[in-house]
Length: 356
Image 1 (cartoon, rainbow, N blue to C red):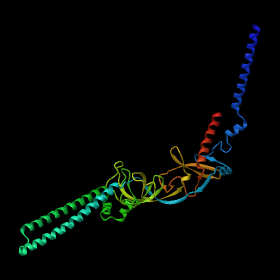
Image 2 (image 1 turned 90 degrees about the vertical axis):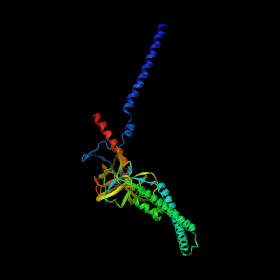
Image 3 (image 1 turned 135 degrees about the vertical axis):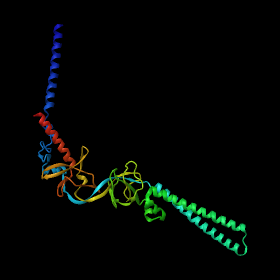
Image 4 (image 1 turned 30 degrees about the vertical axis):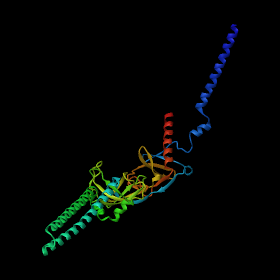
């Protein structure tokens, strides 16, 4: 009986030892990995070390790797561009203007009607007065009635004229002199607004910024990023209460889908003299840590990342005044790949330094 128990214990020990050996071998095999797995973990296309150039890290890729990765470069072109102030724009709803236009038209029609009535009653009174003075064919009572009608129509005409002027004053206080004149003569420009062929934009400069005469043209950036020209209409009689700066009315074509009533947009007012710069294609720009960057090719296989300012859009591209020059080769295809390669290489360099 004791022999059987000892035999069972010996078998159990052997089984446990075998399992432990298998697990140990698997653990070391997992840590070492196979050469094929190691090869997949460290792609040969990524640089293991990145040299420095003017204090910046350089991404080095062989020409054949560049072709495989779809890296495309293009030279920058120069442009002369007027300095601008960044301002704030609002596409104004026109319902209030439409209502005023209706009120003005109704008041103007009332003035026309009362003037016609006044003219008729004045002639009737003058005729009755002449007849009464000549041969008494018109009684005193009839003459008095004709005069009363004339006086009443005269008061009605004055009231209608006052109402028309009140509408005009309201329009001038809200929309300024130019739009009020458009209301009074129903100009073709007003028709374009009413038919939504143009949009009315109120542009306000930041508080504390003072302009002289308003620039005759401006640029506004629609919601989809499209930049379109706008032309000055008039100073705005009221400012945007949120911004407390000078305000102006500008007109822009309504064919741009991103210019919808009530929308807040970016605006750019030209000031000062012409400034040189380069046009950076939108495809060249990558974003990282809230900043804009481009990759410049310094040699056939070397690329350096440079920060740029994207405060001045040019249609779908950017005007950059500092940090880049005409003729610089920037990456316009595959810039995001270079950014990924750069930071993957930095991580590999850091691991190698830790290991050493």
